[in-house]
Image (cartoon, rainbow, N blue to C red):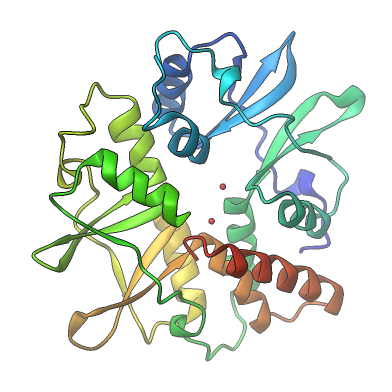
Length: 286
């Protein structure tokens, strides 16, 4: 399936906003449509993209007037594109080289026809894994590095920790025990769109709770299917006595290629992306 074309897995529903839009207006669009990215246009042509990660790194904790600052000031530009006839594995290679989660798909005369994302790649991995004999457990691909913050810590401090640690999520601890999770999506939907004093509001007021966990003994395919079914980017892994032992993210799906019956060229591409991700020490996920 990885040798198929991106046109077969892309989404044709492209959410756009003009470059003159304010940051506040675009954030409201993202929250209302429940999307993690918006393509920014100038003269009806793609000029850039704004993602949840951009909101976290370039908007939050910055001295910006969201009601007045144009989105073009913080968008990622130029936007990366692939032709609709590009093979999925080639698109993966571009994501690896460019270190991003989304690619705009273009058709004739460079018109926008769709978007391909890492979430779509997750769907492929789930489908490829169905029906295959498997013994590999989630513990073999999870990350044991889990960034934590105390529930009393401010939103401002928590976002600073996320940026510093280059992570898309943190686990919130209450009396030393995991009680919630705070992610890039929470930054968008529970902070950026609200009128909140981030320096005075504790993170416990905007975290996602209760936590959803998976047993360490769960098979990789089961974990991936659960993430896709729930629309999660992260799953916490519990060991003996319900103790938190690690975390698995959407990007860990790259390691799943090891158990799939795919050709060597595809396997090499997956391995390169996996090595890039490990070296960046992200929440091992645009």
